[in-house]
Length: 203
Image (cartoon, rainbow, N blue to C red; front, side, top):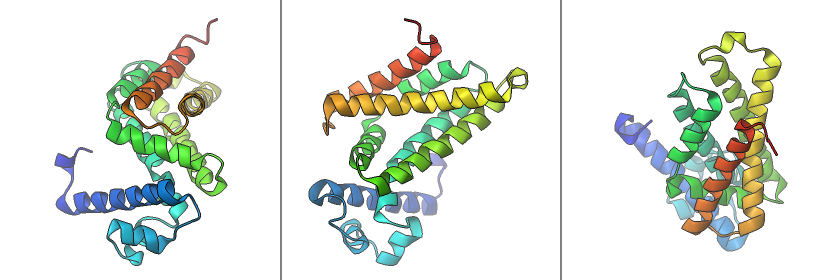
């Protein structure tokens, strides 16, 4: 939903959530994972410890939150395009998610999670939930009645795998670089991975 469609209360809740996530990522960047507490995050975000737990169960969940947010935004936009082939829609959605304010936290979350199992577990949960939602999205599109279950689940899994592969290649290429040019490269890799899938990985 756009800010215009949110109530003032929902806008305040979204702003609080974003502040907590930004604080958690900032502390992870400055101190490293495991070197700060929920209290540290709450203080940095300007909220109470109780407020933190209204939104997240742990620092790791807060750090992984941008992955959930990015995938949910992509799925929302995917649902706005029900009458065209799924992979065409996916490419259009990636082009449309060019805002670095959305891409950068997700990318940083992925970098922080690398090699840290508790955060990575939450990110895997985000990808799994996204896969299930893609399955539902495929079944809700035109002509879906003719598709068998294997096709639907395999396609959804391939889309998720392409996205994860793009992130892994980007991390290997750019390390911890979150400059605009690096984020542009991430979008390029995401687009290329879906393009490969659309072409059947023709060599």
